[in-house]
Image (tube, rainbow, N blue to C red; front, side, top):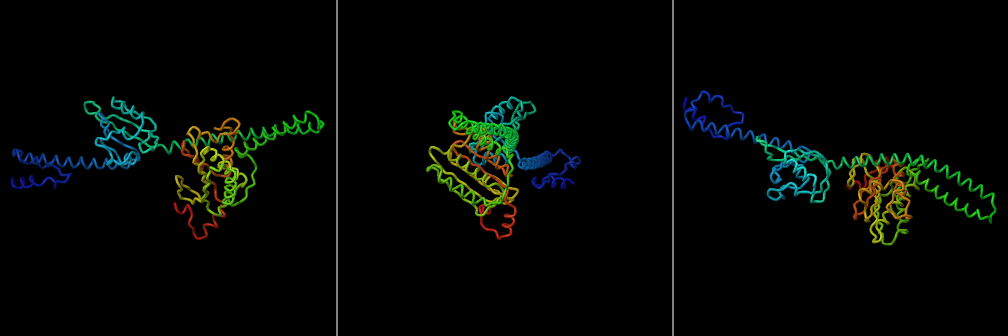
Length: 428
C-alpha cells in the first residue's frame, strides 16, 4: 500500500491533468515530508496551468473586441498589455521601445489629463480626437479607469477607446444634408415670391417705357431698372436651381460626350498654367438635363482653376461606371451608378469652410468677385438628378468633388448583356 502511494506521488508533474482531484490524499499519511512537498508542487503546477489557460482565453476574447484596449502601469504609463486592435491603430509592438509609454504613440492632451485623473483614483469617460505619429486622425470615445490593489492603491490603468471617426463623419454629413434640404425649401419659396415681384417691376417699367418719348431722360432710368431686374431674375433662377423647384424635362443622353465637350471648352478658356487631364469611360448614358450638368462641370472646373492661382496646377476629370458591390477609392456602391470626379491641386479648404460651401451666398472670394451661388446650384442640380456629392479637401492639398449619378437603366441592361470589357471599375 505504501509502495502504491509512493509511486503515484512521484509521477512527473507535467502528466497531471488540470482537473485532477486531490481528495484521496485524506486517506494518506502526510507525516512523510517528501510526500507532502510533492503534492504541494503538483497542486501549484496545476493551478498555474489553470491560470495560464484562463489568461489565454481572456486575451483571445479581448483580441476580438473592436475597440482599443490597453493596461498601463500607473507609475510611468508603460504598456503592460494591449489587444490586437491597439496594434492595428498605433503600430506593431515589435517596433516599440522597451517599457513603451502610452502617450508617446500619439498626441492628445485630453487623454493625458484623463490618465492623470485615473492615477488619482477617478475614472474618466468622454470623447475627443487624437493624431498618431503616422499622421492618422481618429475621433474616439472611451474610458480610462484605475485598477486598485487590495490596499486601495492604484497600481494600473485600463484604457478603452472606440473609434467613432466614421460615425462622426456620417452624422456631420446627415446634418449637412438636412440643413441643405431646409435651405432648399426656404430658398425655393422665397425665389418664387421674389420672381413674382421682379416680374411686376419689369412689367411696370415696360408700360412706362411705352408712355414716354425716346428722348426723355426717364428712358435711361428705365433701362437701369430693366438691367437690374434682369440680373435679379438670373439670381432667382439660380436659387430655384439650388432648391430644384423647377419643372424639368429629362432625356437620356451620352454623359461621356457632354464631359468631353466641357473639357474642350475648359482647355480653351482656363489660364495656360492649368493642365487639364481626363480619363473617361466611353458611352456612359444617364437620364437628366444636359444643360444643367454642363453647368455643374463648368462650375467645378472654373472653381478648381481659381483655387490653383497664381501658381497653376492640374485639373483632373474622371468619368467611370461603378458596379454594385464595387469599391472605388474610399467609396463603396450598393447600386450601379456613374462616378464623375473633378479634382484640383489648389489651396484646399479648412473643415469649417467645407461645411458651408454649398450654402447660398456663402463665398470665400472678395467682394464683387462672386455671388456665392455657384456651388449651391451644383448641389441642387446633382441632388435633383437623384445623385449625391462628396467633397474631400485639405489645406494645401487641393480638393476633390465626387459626383454619383444614377445610371440609365436601359443602357446598363444592354451593357450587362454584352461580354465584359476591361474598365476602371473592373480593375479596382
